Length: 486
Image (cartoon, rainbow, N blue to C red):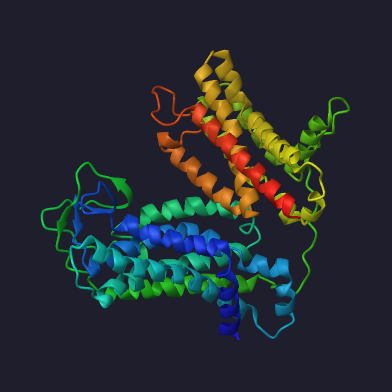
């Protein structure tokens, strides 16, 4: 029965558009992992060298890239197995069946692994094609090419699958907080996993052999190099007993983590208890002004409904601190604080079951614009302290960047939510974008927070405002087309 449940779940997932998108991205990963011989971009840099494009090296670098990418994106792709059973009513049927809780969790783990493993198989197939395309070695050794996927990529995919299942079945982690938290877990794990002393072999860089005379610095990630990397004859993946045992132990640990929720996960035996209403501020609809203003007030109240009092106290503290402390750091914190609320934009109709009711609204475009305005008002409120300080100091470039940020963030959330009908995509993308921005990625500086003491070289406020308008127009067009089909 375990394999039957896993197979049925796998078949249901592969019919989704998201799965097709991930298969296409797997092909793109191969292009990044095995660039042209004269390229200045590389995913793996070994002291200024790269291996010659043989089956062994191509398989190794593609497996590392797959492990790095799918542990991040794959988590969000498979992190819906249990929730989907609950939404569709399948969970109640499972609760009435003789299937034990541990068996149900094991079936979901196998399904997760099958989904991510099929994408890895596409990457391996792409690796063969790219090896022949680059032309440095025309001899295809399938064993040497597949071995890194078995020892490097596969254990990491099992870990990701188990983590997604753990997050789904743990009350605190199954919320949007878990989606945001995984970004930081992935970042720490990626950095620590590249160490030669990482437990269980880390990401799998431990057995990578460097050429004689090269520095011992091994970098994994998309990097730009001033000169094309020098090629050397890579001897292949050294398979040692200790490394194989370490990877087997990692897989066993991941399976144990996936089965751990059997101690507290009650399956679907009991109906979910209604959430107790949280304290939150209500914004009464204004008695003056036109219907547009009342619509914005209504969308604002819907957006922040259920937000507890402690959240508002934290937002107020950050906003007040922005009046005195360096605006860059405080604005960054103030605009990561509402990420779970922004992620509701564009998704509440689908998640609340009111899509059919809202479809009868005579002017969906007004509702989209009102929803975007509500998100922008939330951004303005949480970042008000930094804006007041910039206005006091006559920092008009900073104010323009601040204004662009208040428009861009809710536009990204609204477009993501409308197209995906789920908050996970925005939570993941925005958190990653925010992290890269605070680490001096000028090209992603949509808040203008890096301007203190220097001038960024990335896009300015006009560019981010234009992207915001493009996102909103895309949402309007999508909503109009859907409305016309009904």
